[in-house]
Length: 277
Length: 252
Image 1 (cartoon, chains in turn orange, yellow):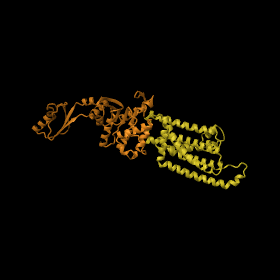
Image 2 (cartoon, rainbow over the protein chains, first blue to last red):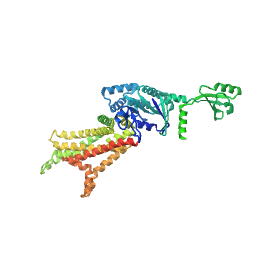
Image 3 (cartoon, rainbow over the protein chains, first blue to last red):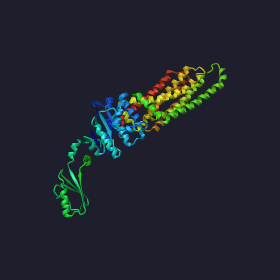
Image 4 (cartoon, rainbow over the protein chains, first blue to last red):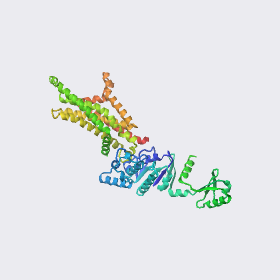
């Protein structure tokens, strides 16, 4: 389960199209399940399930017709096709809309049909290009749950620009920017990289930065605005109690104390700005 | 695999009112022309009989029917072929076909056969008219067969050209207009050939004309060069479509 992360225009979709055989590489090669995508396209594509950014669905077909056609295109026939459709309809929770036209389905359902179509022929590699774009939070949770289930039986390559999605779903993260890979790590390694922690504090009668710096366990003081500071501290040693004590004793008028953990987001921004500079 | 795509394509045509409307209109117009031709034949039959070599029922009624059919198919084909590949592109469904374990040739041939099946249905409907009068009077089956085959070959050529332009065009409407333009140009191109009396240029232009190769077939003289012309014409455009679809992946 690999998450493919990048800003808009970083080259995520292009990479997805390359791997799915929709775009031929000008140099280099793509090998899927031991088959070269250019030399043996049929065998390579047989073990590939691809959901592009826009799910490739025919609006004038019903869900069953769509899945039937897609299955036939993947050489499924008769009983095998019937069972495959039953399986994905159940897996993607599409029972209620089986006879509906694709054009009448909501965006969330269409996305589910797209995933159902991509896993119909039980591919070893599933490529999902931004599967949760344009969905409401409830639908996003459903789709993520589904993707986690898929990851149990096949390799899943998920592209997204939403960092929490990668944190929630993936085992490994690849970050790309301007078409280049800038980070490739497991989610666990990344979590330990995010050891820096901080507190966001606001005061009505703020002390000087030096006074705050003097508090034990405060590494660095960052002034955000008048009366607003970010205090960096080592993991596991929070200066929060000390701050509250001093604020009360010296009447700083503490109004907020918010613990912050550096997110994948800020790591991502740091990495991309480091590469660019 | 080719037949899966062809069957889907044919079903898609009948899912829209377009196919039904086209079939209904074509049958209505051809039926009207056919009946007026029958009237004409009945009215002039006594005079025709006085001629040294009187033309038969088939020549007077059936050949003009298929000539009119050719005109109607010429106007209809762009509407049928426009959606083939350019709609896949505008609906963004092309990746489904491209990432499936099938070749570009299978996709193109499937789409082509789907449209050809529809045109064959139209020609079959049209053929019920001469078959109806064959219950009352014997027909020249050789000539009828030549007409049917000629019109099928003609449709196959037009469908191939439409398929290719649909592969090129970003939107179905562009595909339709350019197909109509190409077909009309090739239909009337021998007007220039008639103007120039002789020379290779005139011969080449006349050879390119779609009409020039159709009329012998409709008159019951199916020369192999005419049949070959339509087959080559179709094969060329199918080949170009396959190449284009394959090539598109290299361009992004």
